[in-house]
Image (tube, rainbow, N blue to C red; front, side, top):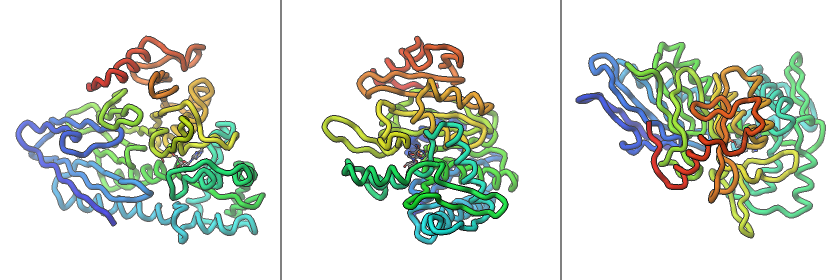
Length: 379
Ligand code: ADP
Ligand code: MG
C-alpha cells in the first residue's frame, strides 16, 4: 500500500499554506494558522484507497494520539473499499454483481442501506444519478481505462442493462435482485462519500474535534474548525487546474464534493467524452465542466455532485431544494468560454426561483473572467 505521512508541527506564528508545502489537493485546501502550539498540533496522513489518495488532517495533542486516529480511520476506509469496490473480485459488491441476475442475493444491512440510498437518488434525480452505469463505463472504456468510442451494438447491449428500475431491493429479506441480465452496480459516484461519512463518525466517536477528511479532493468533510478559526478554508479548483481556485468556501461540520469532466476523458474528432454518463441517453455528459456541491453529509454531496453534473442547474436546483443545507456551483460550457452558475453558494447565488439560473450573472462573469485571466482567487 502506498503511504505517505506528513506531520506539520507548529512553529513561530503557526502559519502554513498546505499548497505551499506541496500538499496540493484537487480542491486546494488552504490552511492557515494560527494554532495553539502548546496544546494542539496539526498532523496529516495519506493512503491510497478506492482508486484515489485519502488524506486526513487532524489536530491532536501529540503524535501518539494522532497515529491512533489515523490507524482507525484508514482501517475503516480499507474495510469499505473491500466491501464496495467493483475493481475487487472479492468485494461484496462484486459478489452481488455476479449473482443477482440469477437469484436474490442476501447482503449485509450496511450495503443494503447504501444501495437504498443510491436508488433513492436515482428516483429523485429522474434517473440522472444511477449506480447501474457499470455496463456503460465498460462500453465507453472507462473501466480500467482512459476511454474509447464504443461500437453501436456494444453500446446498445450496455444500454439494455442500465436502469435503476432493474434493481429490486427487499429490505425485510435483505436481498438484492437484478430484473434483467447484465446489470452491474458501480458505486464510483457515492462510495467515497460514504467512506468519508464513516470515518467522520469514527473520528468523532474517538474524540476528534477538528479534522479534514479528504477523499482525493473529490469529497471533503470538515469536522469543527482549526483552533481559533471559524472553519476550514477550502478552495474549489478551476476545471482542469488544481492550482487555481474558482471559488473559496469555509467549511465547518459539513462536506463538499466536486465532479469534473477532466478527471477522466478522451477526445475524438475535436469532442471530449468524460467519465460521467447520462444514463438516460447512454452518452457521456457534454458541455459540463465541473460541479461542486456542499451538503451536511458526504454521501449526499458525493451523489449530488454527480447528479448535478448530469442534470445541470435548472433541473438540479429542484432536487437540491429537497436537501436542507445544500448548495451547488456549476461550471458549464466549453473550456474557452465557460459560464458559472450557483445555487445557495457563497457569493454566487442566482436564487432558486430565478429563471436565469444557469446563465451568466455578474458574479458568474467575474468568476469566469478571473478564471480566463488565470488570476488566483484567494481569500
Ligand atoms: P469522482 O470519481 O472523480 O469522485 P464522481 O463522484 O462524479 O467523480 O463519480 C464518477 C464515477 O461515478 C464514474 O467514474 C462512474 O464510476 C460513476 N458514474 C458515472 N456516471 C454516473 C451517473 N450518472 N450516476 C451514478 N454514477 C455514475
Ligand atoms: Mg460523486
